[in-house]
Amino acid sequence: MYMDIKKLKKAAQIYGTPLYVYDLSVIDRQLKKFKVAFNKINNYQIHFAAKALSNISILKYINSLGLGLDAVSIEEVKIGIRCGFKKEEILFTPNGVNFSEIREAVSLGVKINLDSVESLKDFSNSYPNQPVSIRINPGVYAGGNENISVGHLNSKFGIPEERLDEILEMELDKKIKVTTLHIHTGSDIIKDNDFQLGIKKIFSIAHNFNNIETIDLGGGIKIPYFEGDTETDLDNYAKIIKDELKKFKSKKGKDLKLIFEPGKFLVSDSGYFITKVNYLKKSNKNTFVQVDSGFNHFVRPTLYKSFHDIINLSNPNDEKFEYSVVGYICEKDTFAEKRKISKISSGDILCFRNSGAYGFSMTSNYNSRLKPSELCIHNNEIKEIRKREEFDDLLYGQIDIF
Ligand code: LLP
Image (cartoon, rainbow, N blue to C red):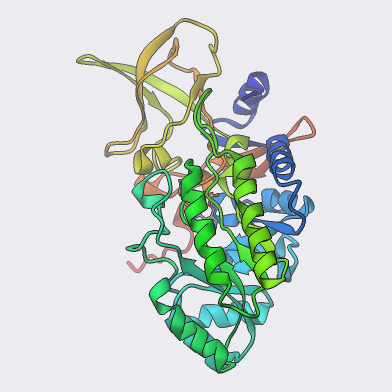
């Protein structure tokens, strides 16, 4: 888990804090790792999950690597098209949106993935027998925490198995033509068994669909958050899939194509969230490290209790002490509790690792704070890819009626 401390410190000195920095070479490394694990599987495509990191420069870079896009809003679809993704390589997977949004996506020419019988009926009325993808609820509880486990029976996502008959009937009546089956069971999935359950389920369902061409296995690959942390065994994941492809071929005589939709796997470790220490506040038994940011800029630790390694870029190799790193928001916004970090002084620059996915994309202006800037490191050069917000940005769009 290499990081270029000097470069990150330099970025903070030049551009100020807080800020996000993405090292594009990490995206290359991750993509290569995926390709190595899947080298025995020929016909697959990777669709990057735009929700993880949607800065246009990053999306353009990812497009230049030959990847497609997983979009969950019409806005993500439009950003994807603007960034040069081919329309047929953008899959729109909305959830509970008004049908007008689906109609707009069809008119833009992207592929549609629907996750309810209700929306599918509207689709068949407007676009009878047009190829469509459907999202299945596999009934599997998988993923790092309950917020990001979305494939279980009580989840709002996907079409439950008990309603498949209605879909098969629509297909028999030539109202719809299901060419892709999709699952996304959760994020941060470690257990091979959880992957296996979802994969087996989707392949068994695929037998019922005569027009099926593609299986989309969503995202969810777990990356390590610290040295020695668990991670998805990619080789085994690939093996489970390969076995199912083989079984399907022998029964149905058909080679299925695959789609994967990684978000975290591709960009999490490429991103660093960088802040500066305002004060070290001693209070009872705690030493609070107060940084110039809060959950408005990086919500994962508060929302999911996620662990992000914190490196003191100003003093990385000193003796370690126990600190609680907190933000400036006027409610609890703890980044790390009682964490051992090398000796911190006021003015030091702290870096949170694994912030590339769902970092900037989940920022807000809570407490009327300005959003940070984003930079990337490409071919050893640091480039700004989003300006820090200014006070006027905060007021933009507000109407003063008095
Ligand atoms: N495909 C679909 C349909 C998804 O809903 C998601 C993520 C992905 C792919 C990508 O999953 P990944 O490979 O990144 O695990 N904000 C949360 C994660 C929410 C994930 C939502 N869906 C977090 O920060 O942990």
